Structures are given as structure tokens and as C-alpha cells.
Length: 350
Ligand SMILES: [Zn+2]
Ligand SMILES: [Zn+2]
Image (cartoon, rainbow, N blue to C red; front, side, top):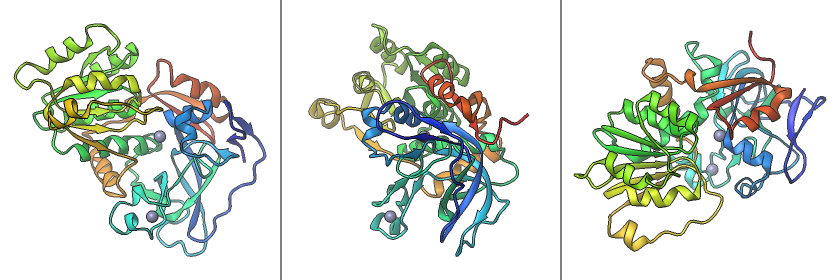
């Protein structure tokens, strides 16, 4: 089969034409990848940034982690998934035995393997995963939309962690796909005002189309603009989401949070961040909550329910489509005017 493989530490990756097809072991299935969505993490891995290296990738490695596809083969002991099932894949491959797995936090398993980071991923014609990573799709969900469930699930998890946003003034830092879906969900869940910060004008326009007030965080007046949109009465936003992973985003967030507000951190900054805990956390009574991945499977089920109801449309996020061999163009688009870029390892559908 063909696959995009990170072969050595340092920037780059290569298309390998004749990789051995994966065979399912005990409890494993093989999936023909239909649509694989490109994520910022893939770009970090491609560029070999510090935040990618911090995941300790095992090379050589097939890249990619967000996908939908069809089960083609199942190994011994597989009982829940059958050939022909259409699935999306949970990328946090959990052990099922550790304390976290046994107490409802399998997404944060102590022995976590990460698809496309520590085990072979989905920028390939086929991928092998444990049966336990499969989310079986109803026929109502397209393969394009299903390939977005992994990243959109991060957005849903961020909302689950925040608690209620009903009636709240909200800040969403970063308008990449995860941030944009957070904007969508906040408005769907009844936020009164959503202010989205993003340096890229193309992405700011996408946020505005969804109904957010978009602010360029790099302009000199950003702090005053934030304060004006949040209004005088509350003294800031009641809930903030950081989705960009940019360390530089934090000063504006600390200054924009109202007293007794909640900050949910989603993006991984590639460096440590210093914060005046006394001033910005203790004395303001701020709650900071981190999230990693999606809750298995309640986040997925909530996302599916929202999509199936028609109240959450994700299809508009896909701005570009590529064949597998054009993966370099697909990855480089992430830093340009794009939202979600999809690679089709078995060919772009007509
Ligand atoms: Zn991702
Ligand atoms: Zn575990």
C-alpha cells in the first residue's frame, strides 16, 4: 500500500509506494481509509517542532490521525465490529486496565498510544487499530463529516469541561478548525456573545460568518476592543477557550477574563508559560481546566447527536481536498488561508 511516512527526525516526510499491508492481530481491525483530515499536530510532526518531539514519536511512522473509513478485515477475538462497517477512529488508544481507564478517563490513559504519533497512522490506504478505537457510524453521516469527528470532538469536550455557557460572554482564542467549532457550539449552547481572536483575516471571516465578533489579537488596541465587546458590567468574559496553542495568546486572555470565570486550555503551547498566579488566578478566582482528546465515548455520542439532529453542520469547514501524493501541499496549506484540509488515500471521490 501507499503511505506517508516520517522516516527520520528533522523536517519532512516521504510517500512510500510499497509498504506492507497491515494485518489485524488479536482484537484488532484493518480499515480502508476514506477521508483523512490534516491537523496542526501533523504539521508540527512534519516540521519536527518541539511540541511534536514532546510526544516522543517512534520513527519510522505513518503520519495522520483523524479519519473515517470502512473495516476490511478483523482479527481473532473481535466481536463488536465487522467487515463493511463504516467507522471513525478514536486516536487515543487506551490500555483498558490502568486506574484512569477503569475510572472513566480512558482518554487520559496512563499507557496511552497516539495514532499517527506513537503508532502508525492514517495517511495510508489502510490502517490497523484496536477494535476498541472504532466508533461505528450510522448511514446518515458522510465520510467527510466523520473524518472531522476527532477534531470536532475536541471542541465538544472543551464545552463539556467548561460547564454551561448559556447566557455567557465567551472568548475563543484561535480560529483553526477546533476553535471555529467551539465558536459554533458556544452559539448553539446559548452564549450571549462570542468574541473570537485570530491573526489570520481569512479565518476571522469564517468566525464572523458563524456569528462571532472577530478581533485581531496582534493589533495594538486588541485589549480595549476585547473589553468593549465584553461590556462594563461583567468586567470581562465569563468563559474563555484557548485553542491556538500560541504562547503569545495568553496575556490578552488573562486581561480579558472576568472575576470568577473559567478558562479551558486546548492548544498545546510549544513552551512554558509564566503567569502571575496571585494577580490573574487567585485574586480573580479563575478556574483553569485542561483537556486532552475526547471523553470516550460520551463526547462522541454527544457530537453524533448534534450532527444527526442537523443543528451542528461541520461540512462547511472543509476548504480543500487532496490526493495522498499531494500531502506536502495539504500540510503547507494549514499555515495559509484554509480551515480543514482532507486527504483521500484511496482517491478523491468524484
Ligand atoms: Zn488532530
Ligand atoms: Zn489505561
